Amino acid sequence: MLPSLRTDKRHLQVQQRLLGLIESGVFAPGQRLPSEVQLAAQLGISRPTLREALLHLEQSGAVVRRHGVGTFVARGYGRRLEGGLERLESILQLAARQGIRVEMQGLEVHEEAAVPDVASRLGLAPGAALLAVRRVMGVDGRPAAFLEDLLPQGVLAAEDFGAGFAGSVLDRLRQKPGLRLTHAVAEIVPVDADRALAERLQVRRGQALLLLEETLYDEGEQPVEFSRNYFVPNYFRFHVVRR
Image (cartoon, rainbow, N blue to C red; front, side, top):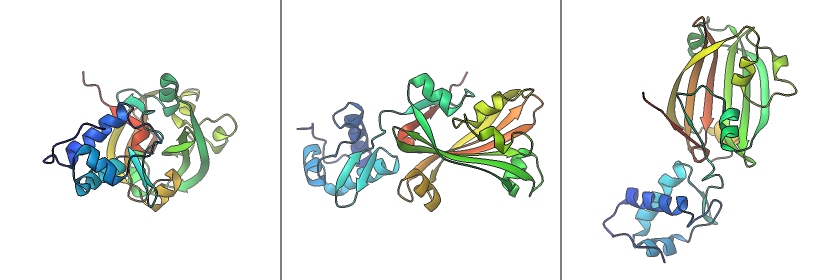
């Protein structure tokens, strides 16, 4: 029996209590939670309050709700890739540092015209030729992030993403002779998955994602790459160190 919560507690307290039970191992990744009736009774709360808490946990990626089946702790929960935005490192480096194996899925590499927003970030004219590199990164066999990198023509070629490319454009740029990367300007915001992202990441439409937009610069202060990376929250956690 779980320790009960007071009936005057709201869904935010219930949400934090459930997260605590998940993080302490009472409910393990992939485990089915008790039914709403059972869980509400064990926590001493109403079913509407529990449903609201579960909805927020689903939107954050902590649980997965399957209609007619039940609610499950997300399989990737507890195996998050955690990194600081103050470090210029690739997902592959971050994963290797934490002993987590990631794999690349569905690599797409082709030329396209720069839309105005992307052109502005890269200092190009709208319609200028770009090389687009898109792929899904998986953790434990499940999609965890959709990565999109856009590079001005000539920075890298499609041939650079053949055999041996493990998924990191940043790592491939660092291997280019004569190119010295110095810093990136990044912004991370929450977004809802549209139909295309939901299909790529195998989540429901409207699922909350973390979008990291980043422009990478060389030592001449010239932008060499713009990326949009969409992360499933239960696989990633970011922090910032202020000095």
